[in-house]
Length: 295
Image (tube, rainbow, N blue to C red; front, side, top):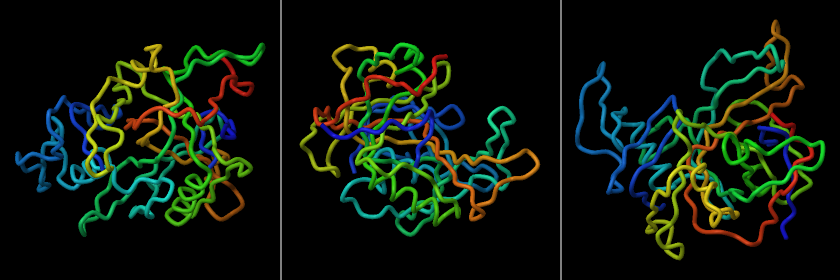
């Protein structure tokens, strides 16, 4: 069984063509059901001089539609084992990160610039080869509960080599060094999920798991929460996870931390969508969570 390391709460210490519908995070695009894998229709309109196109029932800027198709539909430029280095540049989404007085942490979302057919296209998401753990959990006495597991968060398992690659991109793009415990081959990470009435993360399965990545098609099975509620789906699923990512660094309210001055950052993942190739029996899922506190 593969060695699993449990990461601290809500932090990362650190193609195929899709058919039918998908859902994005609440501050972005909720995709309507679709019977084709086309990324953008020919419908266009002017919006302040920006060319808009329709992508899965939403009118979005043309370059964003191109990036959405690239990441969600074609599964290109995602991080994974024996995959080419993604053509992505990481950067902070805003010049002014927010400060949480309760946790004493500064945070900001990351944004990603993709080079697609000579165009630079910005998007708020990246993809990674992961395993999504939808197995039932059992708390140890005094360790809290798993009442919200499969609802507001799930474990995702990511190879250390992939985590290190992501960390290198963060360092190159933002200057921040991201800490992670590097004594395990596979890291267990708590990924957050949106819940209804916000758009929940979508779960898709490959129609033919033996097909090449450029030929495989996926069918949407519902949200991750809906799939988790089905006993026959409570397995460890392997595939591509698509995430929104934020960077967090400790500091005081009157002194914003800066990269390169001794502080290390952490990354927090929010799961947006899953493209599942199948289930795996080669990963030992985390059963107990001694470090997580109940809600």
